[in-house]
Length: 282
Image (cartoon, rainbow, N blue to C red; front, side, top):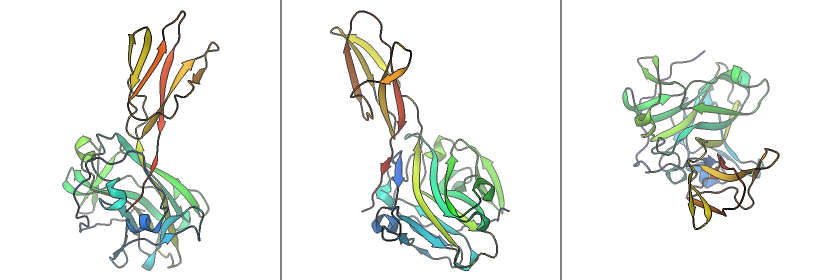
């Protein structure tokens, strides 16, 4: 099923943003956001901004393409997209993978994957995720959410051979470009359509390490949620159920929580969850 498709050009020209945005969430709310992405057509080798389906077409805007000439398409972001939110050092920001939603007819799809430009086993170049095929989709034309993890094997490509490797810190620290490629089965028509939406840099969801102390008769809890996360302080109730402490939900940035020390025992914990940020492009 998998075709051997080799790309032999490099299209980014900008320097890396120092800090990518963990939890960056592209919803294509405007034509400006769409224009900051690039669409490559394998049919004619042309780069252009992808067409945009705005609110007059759909209440949930997105970008799209047709399979011109029955060939694949590639939507990608670089340092000019969303002020560089999708490129840079994924390792320090603990970005665990990519989520993306695609609108496809499964019977028309050969495979879908991600492609990134980074410093990998073969040096600077393009590297590829595991593929998603029709078996990973449903039965009808619809939107499908796909997840690609950096904990899984990725692949280098040389002389038509895909070789697996496990992304490490050096690879993840060098992401210069990232995008989703969608390839149709033979025989699709020019009316065959694909949409892309909700492109997300998935943060690593983990509770922040707490620091506790007693100061001036107060219990003091300090912590900082990780990149792309918000935190909630919870207290154990007498029925052994955890409940949110009033006013201590959806916390971001450095936090200091205090409570007077009194008789009895109280147990607190810090829970974390994704805190996605919708990006904009200038």
